[in-house]
Length: 449
Image 1 (cartoon, rainbow, N blue to C red):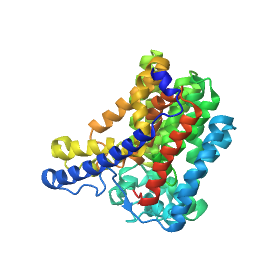
Image 2: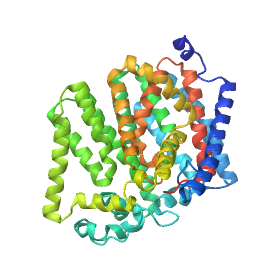
Image 3: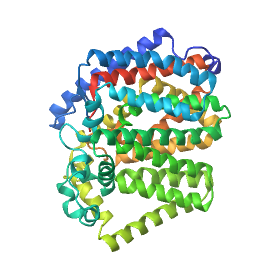
Image 4: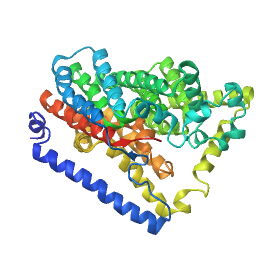
């Protein structure tokens, strides 16, 4: 019966689409009012105004922006039909996804879409510190001496994130160009790796290309894949997992270690991947040598950097941790805020994933477990690792839709499993619904972190 339902020309009836949309918006409004009241009475601090969205400023779009959004929304239909029915080259599929990411971003205006996310409304971004670097080597050498005095984002990250923006700024010379180049790097890189993750498990390559295109339409991808270092982090971690799942050689193990070290130099959240890496090795390979190699490699590199550059990674992590948790573990320091921000972190991810994909995620989990046990293990480990981060008090102010872009493949795999039996028209309709949410969010909000 379920298979027959998925083979119908609709995944959601018009009535259910309307109902899901109403319930989705109503839940956001109701939860916002409850959270705001709870913050004021029980926690004693200000919630994000648009809770559970951590960082957003509303805006009224201009007429040309509405027209562009309408044109993109209408244009998605023939593009989606072409991709799902004609099986074009993967490069064309990735290119279409990239153009849509750039298209929805430019709906906000050239400066507002590409410069503001990089520079920030309050000068809190990496860019503000990056343009002040005069000697990149000295920046690393003395990092722990001035880390606490950097702007909000840089001071809770390793030096790599700021150095990356510094390098792009030296090469390109403008904040808008940096954002565009990040999109040009991150979207094709992640899309290709997603294809490499799905293709060996699914014989229908036309379907796989359609799923890659659907991924590009997800609101979190559309909103955050232009201008954020987190998008590149997501691609790097996905690359490590593709190597883990489909390659068993020593060179692949070493490449996994290199990719994860690069991520560790960009963000302290690289630890997310360790439980996934270890768990997959134990459950699927009955070995732990890749995990051991990764930890040893990262440790040796940072010991070498400490010896040559006097950069102490653990000290930098300790400084960031104290900035994020000045009163210690949040569960003990402020239990009410702890639980509300845990809920906020989960809710924001699901809001940017969208209601339709979230429903299909739930429906697809048992199908993924039955048909692709290795990928099901991969998904469960990713979700479990995310819960460990949340339980440990990470994500003080949410922003998880951006910071946790690396979680999207884990959420997306059950969706793919469910859609495997869907007809092309049903998938096209889903693409339209997912992209419509992204268009709406880009038209009426500015997302700065």
